[in-house]
Length: 150
Ligand code: DQA
Image (cartoon, rainbow, N blue to C red; front, side):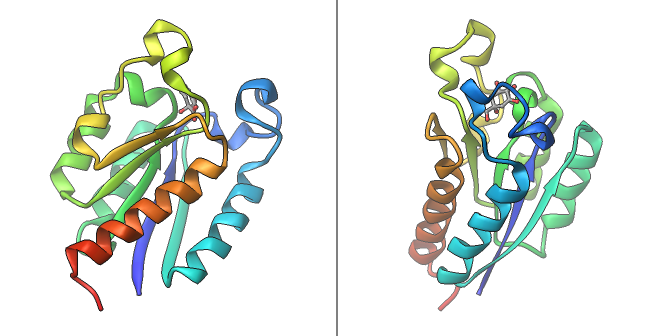
């Protein structure tokens, strides 16, 4: 059994309402419910948390130290400028995967840069809500390869 913290940054509580042409029609609750189903099949326990506040996300990352096996994170706009979230991810040294619903690389220039990408295993962008499932699969594969659980 692996334990994964799923973090959603600012404005992701507005999914379903917020720019559906960019982010899709699914609510965060629906995304979380679907992800739970995938997690059960992978023997992964999930804790999901959304916040519009940088410090709250950082506190959660710190709490994951010693209690979680990995982190799945969509930092929202913090992706592009939060050195503090980047440093928190680096501090806990947990395997993490960065997810974006939209393909940030084909959007506005300011979204092309991710300050968190250098401290995660990899980034998944542009597959909508399915990206969270892909991210969870990637983390699962990483755990299996690391062989730290049987
Ligand atoms: C996002 C992309 C970010 O640029 C944006 O600020 C978000 C959502 C995505 O999931 O595509 O809030 O992280």
